[in-house]
Amino acid sequence: MNRDTYRALSFNRIFIDSSLNIEHPDSGKDMRGCYDFVRPSMIEDVFVLPMTVFKDGYGSLRPAQIGAAGYLELTQLLERAQFENISDVVILSHNFEMMVQGRGIPDLVVERRFRRFCHYLELSQESCAVRTVREARAAEIGHPDENNLPKVGRMATTIRTLEQAFRRLLER
View (tube, rainbow, N blue to C red):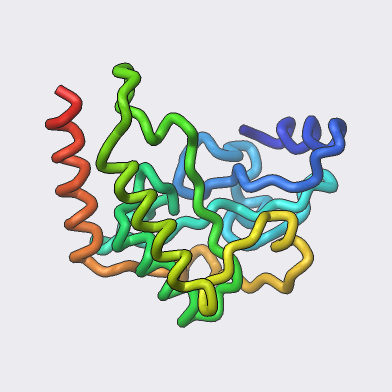
């Protein structure tokens, strides 16, 4: 994904995007230093609400992604965002994340995480509204700067790391 992506989106009348990911080195390679990869911005007439990235319990950058972050990390991220008055958190999930790579069978660890997270969102409706990116565009959005990303606890990251090891064992 690069600047040409936004030209193509604009040309094709797609005016909202959440592809920018500061944690992924290939995301917007030719745009780094020119655009904000953390806060919402406009690029080529496209409203960009970047994918949320947080600091895990060990200080590493981590994407807010169902297949890449643990349940506790995701819930702590939302709680931290609320505490820091961050109005929007963009969480990514690819359709293939629910499957074991190359095997065509459900990834039970990610499926369980997704179900638990959806249940958490259901129970947290008053404090944690779920909305579309289109709805976010109309709101006043206040994200932290790149040097002040939300941070989750070390225990949450340790549990996710153990889950990942368990998933790798199941994949064998």
